[in-house]
Every structure is written in structure tokens, then in C-alpha cells.
Length: 316
Image (cartoon, rainbow, N blue to C red; front, side, top):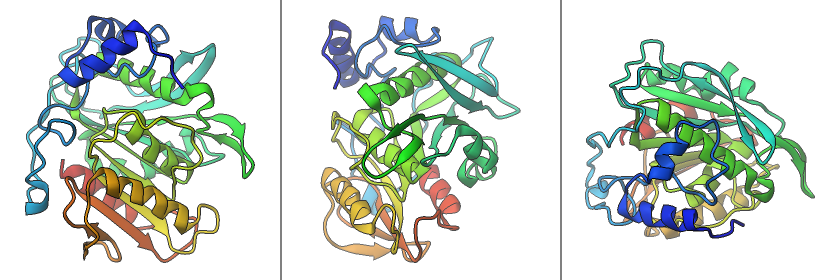
């Protein structure tokens, strides 16, 4: 999907070394990162986060507390970004998103960063109106939230605004957002998360393969069959996924197929243990927490999902 370039090669090497390239730092203060090809992420997760070269021995022993990761280049900035509407130019197309920064933001405090993706036909405004899928009130000013607008598109099943990732555009959009946010806000680089419902759930499953910046994902009613993507990163990634047992739109079988991909990458066993909220189960023997919640219902958000998602993210 993305052609290899010297910058892309440098980015891949940098991810292995867990560093920030000069090009990345320069890009962090720009309005977009079109000059960087491929997914040259601002940085990879640190040694303390689950992933390549990381120790995961504590996950199954009940250990959940982790020290904070390194801060982004935006820590200490005298002119941090504030809440509002922002735009990135991606391949000549203006891509819009809404940023929510805590009112009492402290430029020297490292915050969680949470991306919340809208469903098919939705918008960033819809996510904002819903309190970022109910997570903002639970975060108690400890997190920065982002809600972006998708683009119109279609396939043989549906059409509308969403995350069609035509020519990799949605992934480049996410990359541009990461660079701007990392360069102008104080973010804990080991605590970047993704969640969303329906098409937003599909996006959350997908970004876990396209990017290594994410610490955990919490998809709801999604799959891995719609959004074209590359499986660039297959190291272990914590996941808590939700899916209605009678979903007629994104069938449970499609959700389970995405779940099974994560079970494989997280090296899980077949045994499960019930966890709250019921009927969620946690797979045993995994490198990292891997939870599946197949709840009674159709293609709809689950009322217990916001609290469960926030508790899941908060353990990291």
C-alpha cells in the first residue's frame, strides 16, 4: 500500500530503536506530514510497554500497575494546543478532527491520548456529543480525546462517511494527527488508545496492525474485513472487544474472526475465565490482556461498554 522510501526505512529502524528521528521532530511542528512516506510514527512504545522486546511476564499474574512512559516533545510547551477543531491536509484533501484537552491542562503532566472513531455515516460531532462514547466523564481530566471525520466511500455492502482508507489516506491522516499532537501536547507515549463503534470498531482493530503507537484497543461491533490495511505490526497488543450476539450488520462471525486474529498475535490459549462485566471472558495464557465481550443484542453499543473500556485502558 505504501512505497518504501529512505524516510520510511529510517522510520522502521527508529521504531526498533525506540527513538524519535530529526525528521519526525521537524514534522511534529508542521500542520501535516505529507513529506514523510509510510508510517513513520513519532515513536514506538517504550521498553516498558507490551510489544517487541518488552517483558510481559506480569500480565497473567494480576499485575496491572505500570509506571508512566516517556513524554512527547510537546511536554513543557509554552504554546500547547487547546480544545477545538483542527485540519490536516492529506493528499490535497482537508481532513478535520476535534481535539478535547482537559480544562486544567498542565504542560508538564503526561496525559493519556484516546482516539474515538465514529460509525458509518457518523461524524466527529456525533462522537463529541456522546461524550466520546461515554469515556470523557470517566477520565476525570486525565486524558486528551480526539474525534475525527471520515470520508465518503462505499463497497458492495454499504456507503457513507467512514474509514474506507482509500489509497491509505486514513492511515496518513492518523499519522499526521499523531505528529501534531505529540509535538504540541504532553502525552504519555506508552498510553495511546483507540476505540469506536461499528466502522469505528473496524478502525480500532485496524490501527493496531498499521501502527505500533497504540498501547491497547477496544473495538465495538467491528471486524478486520472492510478496511484495507497492512499487517505491519503483529507483536502483542492488549485488546478488549465487544460484539452483539445477534448483530445482523457486522455479524458475530466477523467479529470473532477479528478476535481470533488478536488471539493468535497475543499467543493466547483456548481457556477463558469470566471477568466483569458479564458475559465478558478473558483468554488465558496470553502475553497481554485479551478480553472478549459477546453481549446479548444486535448492532448497538453495549451500555456496560464505557465503564469497562475505561477500566481496561486505566490498568496501563
